Image (cartoon, rainbow, N blue to C red; front, side):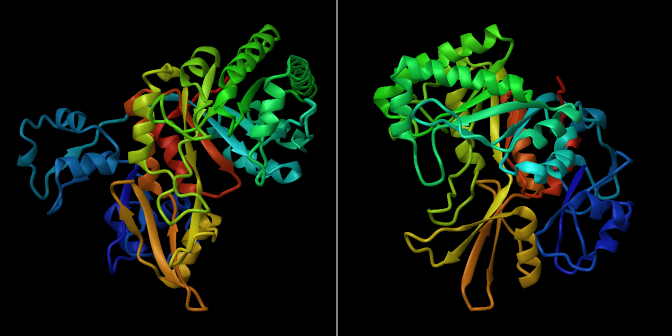
Amino acid sequence: MRIHTVQKGEALWKIADFYKTDIEDIMEANGLVNPEILLVGQPLLIPEDIREHTVISGDTIWKIAESYGVPVQELLWENRIMTPDTIYPGLVLKIPEKEKPVIDVNAFTYILGDDAIPVVQGAGDSLTYLSPFAYLINEDGSLVEIDDEPAIGEAIAKGVVPMMSIVNFTRNVKGENIAKIILNNPEIVETVQNNILNTMRDKGYRGLNIDFEYVFPEDREAYNRFLESTVNKLHEEGYFVSTALAPKTSAEQRGLLYEAHDYAEHGRLADFVVLMTYEWGWRGGPPRAISPINEIEKVLDYAVTTIPREKILMGFQIYARDWKLPFVQGQEAETISVEEAMNRAYRHMSEIKYDFVSQSPYFRYTDDEGNAHEVWFEDARSARAKFDVVKEYGLRGLSYWGLGYPFTQNWVLLDDTFDVRKL
């Protein structure tokens, strides 16, 4: 699967003709609606049956390899090229077949009830696990019920493992006080565990994800004890346990979000972990990439020293954010889908820019009221960059937040890059 970046004056028919493919195939792979509208800087996935590339002026071995998502050395070997700078326009290169790594893929979904059925249907072939989000734990150990049975039923029908998700927080409450009460009371811990097991049995869950955030630093050991006893109890019943971890770059990192998350203990006890490698560009902060590669790699550089690589799912957010400019402290960005981000770019004929440090796309526009906006989102290039990181670090796989935000290019490229494990 190639990625073509639209240049000024290009039309879809011309791009299809150049790559000897059909307009309809390009539209389907990229979720395009109107073949007449393309934006400068917009990346397009190019489905190709023939694994050949004719060198044109300006091509380099490195550029060609990146475009096809293959290692430079494999491209050189396949074509018996000894010196990379000896290629020339008109030379036909054979593109080696990619060996697709097998990975696990989880997705959290906040879409519940019957609305979840088409969402899970659409992504199910590309998932190992599905996590309806989420059961809130009350101070007495009871669980706040959610309408997750339609999602669970559809997941099972698609061969996807349902994973229960429990949390200590809401959108407006960090949950540190709830965590303190629960984690330090053995009777409440037992109540929580029994309620989890009853829910899993009743609804058909096969595993659990524990997402406790903003736990007080002094409750770190209590959290570790809770995790160990929960893992032991659920393992006895044949269930797996995973945890969600804040994106730390060292064991000494300070802050309420980080200090109680003991990477070493979670890596030892849990069957796998989800690293929440997103939200650098959070809704209450200034505009920036939401999940920048340079920041993700800092987290992974630390994580792989304390957690086995085969236990790490790297988080990947598939939503976009729209900030009003100039940014004013206290204002919130609007969270939208990648599809909606592109619709706004089309409406205002914005040029798509790409930040190579963060490996993230963005654009600017002016709305009908004259307000300037900056939008950071994801595209085929940023998705490929994240997939490359998963391969380079030898991770277990990916965890998406969250289903319900349409992003066609991601799923097409995911299936082209990996084989997704089914259990």
